[in-house]
Image: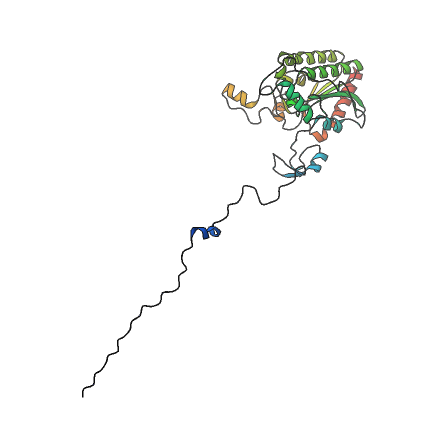
Length: 312
């Protein structure tokens, strides 16, 4: 009997695919997106009033150290702007300064109108600078052993511009120096005549120079100190008629700004144009004195001028 051989069918099964994680839905992918950094740095903001960055050497200066150094960078010698009263305090002997015409204020005679009225600008600057009524502080003080008529301009008040009050205060200061027989020292920083007052501001150029001419007739010294910046109507009047003209280092001094001159003349300006170093080299300025040495040097110059006047 024939036996029936049953062939076993081989069962071929497909290999099991490895487990695959299904693709995530868009709502589940948000955690994979790199978060955008905000424009603000993660570092804590540096508190104001502690450090100042020097625009010349880019070093950070502790504000108290800068104040103690008369606003001069201890690393590179850059001269920061300084207020009129701070400067007076650095020059005169303690409690020797007697301010004159302290309450004199500018008024809007021409009723100037523009983006903001002149009257509104004056009010804003007086509120901002509570110790200033206008762009100059004048008075009689003592530098070393010398009593002097001292006027100090302040760029923080309307760019130190010379209006009718600034011109009148300086004229009265010069006349007081002439009457008392004492030297006059004016420290200038200004953008020029105050155009809000039109012709009244330009008249101050002649008025201040006229007072200085009478002062010179009495053979009394007048020292002009130029600081950064000193321009336009101020440099074209009392600032450049001194018996001795001193400037702080790297101060910008001129009648019109370099950009205006370049655009007008269509010529390249020389290196260092209108700096105090350039002007000393070309004969306008007699000497350049650092702010930290200013008091000592003024005493020396006053001693010399006083001795010369006695000998004459």
